[in-house]
Length: 227
Image 1 (cartoon, one colour):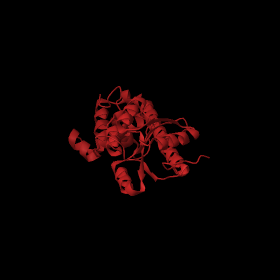
Image 2 (tube, rainbow, N blue to C red):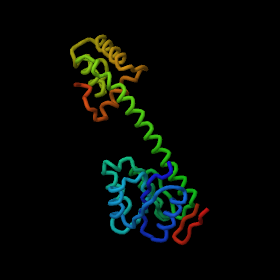
Image 3 (tube, rainbow, N blue to C red):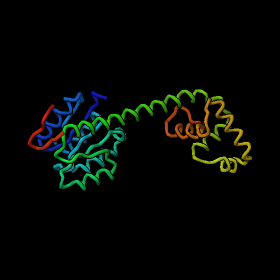
Image 4 (tube, one colour):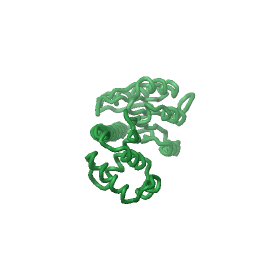
């Protein structure tokens, strides 16, 4: 996934420049910031795929910046890599506990840097593919929702809420056998197969906003060696 966009936040100018050059050398786009505040503004405007940030920054530190970034809906899927000195390695672990994707301890090699970046992009690519498959399934199956009866829509809605067959039967004042028949009919009309396909579909449908509801190397401050 070359040409992906990376936001680098590092207050030491020489180090920031060297890291950016390496990232660009390997085919990725990069933009840089020297403070957390500047980084947040760039992240909001350009929506990077990955943010690489030092923990110790002037003004707001990397932790606070991470927290504020993750509160922005458009950046929830942006991967985050912390940079930390050996003396603050425990801080990196704290960052991972907050939900960061990876951390690099200075000095680190260019291979370590690029491997971490590539790993993040691979995961993002798989996530995007999975989301696309889910959307395609929803779009294809949603076309058949109009074939469901009013009661079947109600049953599908109850399934999306995580209720079991006995629970649905009790709520709708019918027998379990009746609900089982409805589930079979819904699966048939929606071309779903497999023991859990109907549940998966109902949950995916619920998490979307459909048009219609179913219920209606080393890198230190002094030098970086390039390949």
